[in-house]
Image (cartoon, rainbow, N blue to C red; front, top):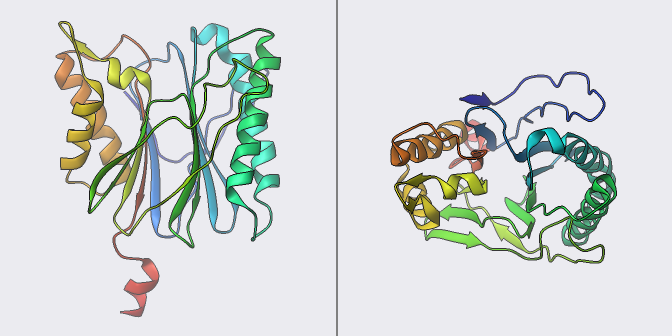
Length: 258
């Protein structure tokens, strides 16, 4: 099992994405965990794009990892180059910026592949000042938002990337109240099987709802471990990836003031 919290990205080599450096957030934390060796096209990234905004994303490129390096590397280059430009100004319209980022990633994947290659993707811009996340879900598994009201699913707002050159994707916004958590999982999490039964979205929701840890890394590890326990074996059927964003229950500023 590989855990990524924070370490420096190595130099990028041709056709291979760089390692993501997890940004430090003021009153929140983000972590990503994947299990075992990479087999498919799961890829995640985090990027601070302004003093109070962090953009994060999870992509699942169809096919084997050996066929996807160039596509993933090109998508990461677009993500890291364009996102800071789109969110450069304080008064940016985040929905417009996320929609433009989605369209650019779609073009990049189509051009890098040279043919159709389905790539479900979920990306969000977390605004630390407002505690909001503006996101697009391009045919990805639903994001899950947990707060004091329960679990809210964030379903697809458009088609997977890499299919149609003029596909569009809406970019709604959700609020993360203090103590709320946002979880993104790859398809491999839901597809984990014991006999003929899949782990599934309902089981994920229930596990997420009753998770006791408010630590992003522990929460991610807990989901991976739940899949492993359900399957009665380490998951090797597909990439199994979890990304979690957790907003602190009490802000640092309030704690200092108190």
